[in-house]
Length: 430
Length: 90
Ligand code: SF4
Ligand code: SF4
Image 1 (cartoon, rainbow over the protein chains, first blue to last red):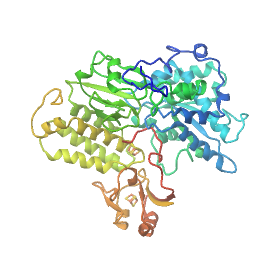
Image 2: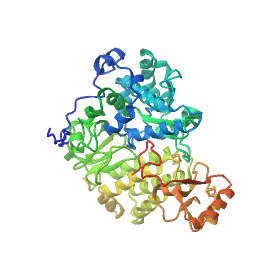
Image 3: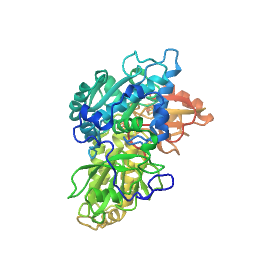
């Protein structure tokens, strides 16, 4: 790999990446975890951790790619304001409502201790900045939770039982709905037992779980925090690019020979390199859904996988989902299938989402089903513009963003469908 | 500081009283729910107000039968900083 003068890799065509997050191997228990990563006291890593995270440039791996240190600092800052500072809450979010995502589940199965290390260290950092002492419950008085689906919880509980201090961390089961991992839904589930997003007039960083400043962090982000806390910001930056440092896990799925695989890839890697590494030939694919059901369809080539970058040359990894379509699958039908699912996953709380997404789905179903009214295309577009930005959570704009990328990438198929050509399997995009 | 009209979509039932009181600010969609005129993205949930619209907005806040409206005073947020949630925007 070429190295730039700063020491960062500049050629991101290569995907060769030493495993970091999964370095301890399959099903790593407490002993193997310590063997691999070294003896370490996460509680003691709190002081200075937010500064190290800022240097590292770590961004959230759950979808929004927000800088982790900023999000943490916002929570730490509000805890300090009042006379009786509210003790903050940190929640490890392992809910993967996204049907195409399985990297968080994989991480929790094989490296639960790394996630718990990150959770404890970050909680200690928040407790620290609030001036609280570690005599209070948890790390520096901060409450800790792990929120994950049933399938992952047994492993998490086992890991918590294996390690000293593990019992201070509470576990809560996430339901299997698309929206269950949205941060206000996470807080609502822990507080009230319903995993529905709540109106976000007040930020969770100010008033979240039981009114306390609350930080909801994706489990992979926490595992990255643990590694950065151990090995430092410079070590983290040895992978990836200057603007997208480090590595990320991606859940890759697609036509045979690929089954579902989780890969750890450097920031800024080329999408086509990831597809090849997963065993697919980019030339035999019609399109790739990147970022998941709230992501974008793109052509299989010429895109760097990175949260920030010129549209057309970069595509946001979101929650790290990469799903490839072969030439035989109709992109319009696939998009209609996903939109039907998303319309059904609206939490039916907010009018524009509850009525708008099913209306969009019905229009797209008519197009996919071969109805030749040329006005259906503009109606789909109009409905998308009508619902976006209007909901307690970002489900409406996430959904319409995915649909509008389909209108782009499968434009030729749409035109053909709407003017009465049956393009058959694969469509004209093939 | 800037004033925003915040719409709590989980409470609004879309009968459109607010759009009658604030015709310059709010339109109605196909189902009766308020749509901020000329705004895109999250500005349609936290609608930035001109000073001239504040009184009418205050009245809508009082009269909304579902208590779905509120006025929020705050510094204009940096892009992307409003709700660092899990689901990505565009
Ligand atoms: S926008 Fe949709 S998914 Fe989000 S809270 Fe409202 S109804 Fe539920
Ligand atoms: S008056 Fe209140 S409930 Fe009625 S449409 Fe407006 S915001 Fe919704």
